[in-house]
Image (cartoon, rainbow, N blue to C red; front, top):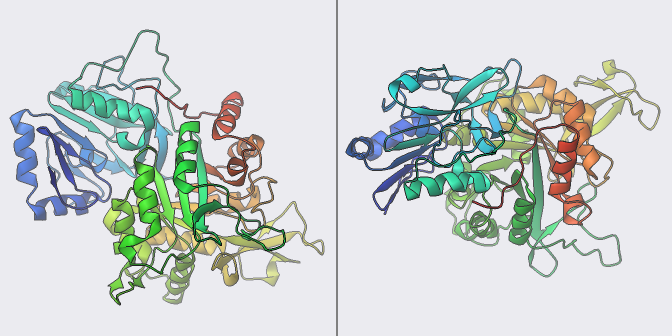
Length: 516
């Protein structure tokens, strides 16, 4: 049976095995458990000796407390406290694929040759021997110069900081070992450990809309124009969303992003086509799924007011791991500055990040270059560019746009990025209208400017045309991930070819595993 709570606090029981998943804020999660009356049941199950598994925030709440919510105690099954990653030299949240090394101990299918998907800002610092002295087997990971706990196991308890359900076959192996009661599995003779640390993420992006025949298709534009250049100008049809998502997963994509580029507002919200796409995709695709488009306060077809948080919750319950907010983020940033950089607490970003954690919120930015003769000619944050403007200008700034690039606002990309970071955004999807559909490579200057202004992760987007462009952006900028679309959809290159090329250049990537 399932005891219904919230997305981050749903308790699942499978033949007397209890699984405690978690996504979100430590304090909010604990308060929801408490208000729902789950805490005594959790403690009773653990004390009974029956198999118990906890995931992500589920692991965190087993400890005594967290600096994320200093006044709220955890369940206290494990001694220790969580603190926040240091963001002075790296992006926080820690998002992506990292290790779970067990020091040659066999622990629930964990392998030193595998990578697992993490998404969190707070961690249990690893201090050698501390948890081991309490009888725990410990798997560790490293992010920058910080070593932290990736998983712990003792007796009937298995807890993972990473998400096994989103860690491909490597994660499914862990879940299977738990369900089978196979505690002593994972390491085999001759198994080579991969290098510790966060891998480079390669993301496949699918723009989804209805075509002229009314079918949901994956499409791709040139400077956001998705229609063919031939007579009639039909919407480009590059394939079916669910089938293509599975294909990219099997090629080794680290994440899949769906961008809803039409509103789909002619039906009740509960019947939105993207909800079904997420449900179907999550049945066969075991990596993180991001959904963008329509995440805003709205009115249902029956006149009911529906908040952005409720919309996001519908997507999360359908299989999404993150939601992406676009034009509404620009509007929210404008209001933020108009109020003297004061948070209202009412924006979609703030509401969703408070409930689900900032790692669940992505802001999709659509900037384009505006050239100026001198930096003094504008109030905006400029750069000196290697690529002069039409009149030889050597300075430019990046103007934010809304409505799919059709409307330019008097706000630059630095202003927007810093504002949404303050609101609680966990990641920036950094597009570039000038580069979209050009296959000429990412805008490295844009990426450098944004990365220098914020501490949250950045996904480079727009312009990828070959594997070399991915190597270039990872080698020449501090981007945290890179996204491809058209080059994959057209079959010019596969995700595997990109990752193989990166590995050949000495960059750390996750290798796809096909067999449990």
